[in-house]
Image (cartoon, rainbow, N blue to C red; front, top):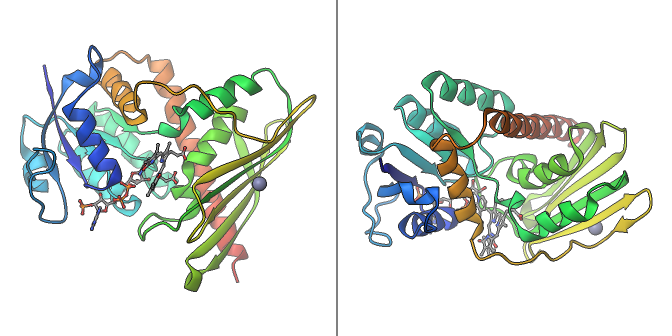
Length: 293
Ligand SMILES: NC(=O)C1=CN([C@@H]2O[C@H](COP(=O)(O)OP(=O)(O)OC[C@H]3O[C@@H](n4cnc5c(N)ncnc54)[C@H](OP(=O)(O)O)[C@@H]3O)[C@@H](O)[C@H]2O)C=CC1
Ligand SMILES: C=CC1=C(C)/C(=C/c2[nH]c(/C=C3N=C(/C=C4\NC(=O)C(C)=C4C=C)C(C)=C\3CCC(=O)O)c(CCC(=O)O)c2C)NC1=O
Ligand SMILES: [Zn+2]
């Protein structure tokens, strides 16, 4: 059976989703999807040959089984809830929501309804990350820093510990569950500049620092300083480029979940990681807000 699909929110991510749904990776679960339309808050012409439909139509049509939520972060929660309530599977661009408790609620709702709720994590699929993970395998961490810089985000992307959840996901995937010991935020609204610093500890009590810095003219980059017992890594390794795009890899994973090809253990592990990261993001936000002038 084909999985009728709708893309919600036509920005960078939404356009890539439509492109991939229209040209799925051959012989993969991505071929099971069939795009039926897109939803936008604007009135748009056909996009890539796909027609705009209303949210009401997307929610009520019984030939639509899955929604791809690609809007800015503040309204993920509301869209996810609506589509789950309507009995549709959901794939949402990270971060799922802007609080830990709302993510727990949504996950419970998906479980009650017997639906797949999938959060995209292309940062774990990048060649550089895959290489980094290989390079540090078996090494014992002493301390580390992950410093992200990027251009200013548009409005409605939420607190930086949430909009930057990809960096936190890296740290948790590499070093296991973390605790937050301190966090602060420096913001210069008039310059569209911000810098968040979070201090974390691994279960072995080793310190990790995460810096998320954004402002006009800052290039999208990650600097790492990782010190291990007998080695240091101060540059992100360049991994081998892969023929399949990142969002396509994620689409195949969502498709595998819908086909029941992902084990319960794997699903549970992923869910735990996602909720743990959102819980850390919540804590970082709380601590930062307490230290703000
Ligand atoms: N860009 C990327 O590489 C990645 C993005 N993500 C996630 O994807 C989500 C969306 O990010 P992204 O696509 O980059 O954000 P964009 O700013 O490109 O788009 C966000 C929303 O803004 C609206 N929009 C887009 N273009 C315009 C325009 N010209 N005028 C007015 N409104 C517009 C669209 O909603 P509507 O059609 O309803 O108007 C769109 O869904 C976020 O959750 C982000 O974290 C995750 C991984 C990678
Ligand atoms: C050129 C402008 C440009 C914009 C506006 C952009 C937006 C953008 N990229 C993101 C992640 C991401 N974006 C990319 C990659 C890309 N994303 C792209 O739009 C393109 C062209 C690539 C190139 C391969 C990756 C891999 C992530 C996941 C997080 C990471 O690893 O940095 C996110 C999610 C939030 C975040 O993690 O920071 C946003 C909003 N990325 C950009 O590169
Ligand atoms: Zn640095």
